[in-house]
Length: 370
Ligand code: SF4
Image (cartoon, rainbow, N blue to C red):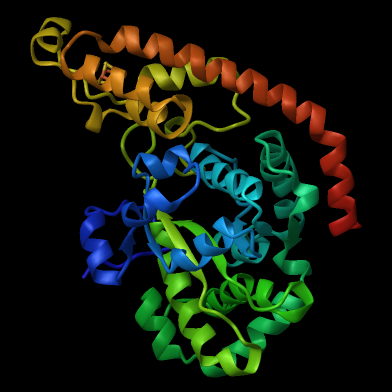
């Protein structure tokens, strides 16, 4: 049985097997009902869900629903994180009430990042980029775990019905796991369920869009929601699952390997160098590639187009076909990609400058000592 580890460094090998093992439903079955689906949904990057019907019903009927996610301020924001923000922007436009948690307690327990440092990273990397990417933070509930008495209090209350065997079975904790890490899943469960407290709008459908490695938190939150359904009226949270974006050499994208990931605050020339070094699905020689064609499914440059830089499906399909037929070779393809990526980065930097004072004000409100 494959174990999903929210703090691990590996990539899942077989997404279909994961879906079977953990009872994740294919999103494809709901796709025709989703209004104007996001490119990540249309392309199967967001591939699975639990109980998304409940949220969809509200979305289509203009009813209330919440969207909950967290960003851990432990390093620089990369394109894997952008994928989550793209989803939040989409939900915000579809009427979802966005709850954005800055998971500084997680950064502390799992990575040893002090709260003060976490706050700085959250501002410079995450909040600025979120707003610059189109998320209207003033219309979200943004909070820091370490400053939220509601979340911490709820975690403590909910913990009385969760025992050690349960968390060990889900997370694989060992005798070496320190207690703050051991307790952390309860904070995460409280993050997921707190939008349904009366103070934050009461029980209603809530979707948590996550990478599939975060599913353990969802399974625990759903179990806990069921145990407390009478006391708090919780509905089990819904979730969607996206594939984990690979880094430029095919591993799991991580802030701790700077040369393998594209960070949103990198200078454009750094992206240029990194993209030129990226693994492709090309053949050893140009001649062989023209004869046999390339393999886009193995190519990290193609992945960048699919996840981020080619919003039009028609254009992406054309690239795939030209690559497979050997009509384009990797050098030429990378050149085009580099230009697109650098344009994106320059615009993002401009946007960050424009929104800086607005985000600073917001941070003062939610974290007055900043
Ligand atoms: Fe990847 Fe482009 Fe090369 Fe095809 S031609 S393998 S898409 S870099």
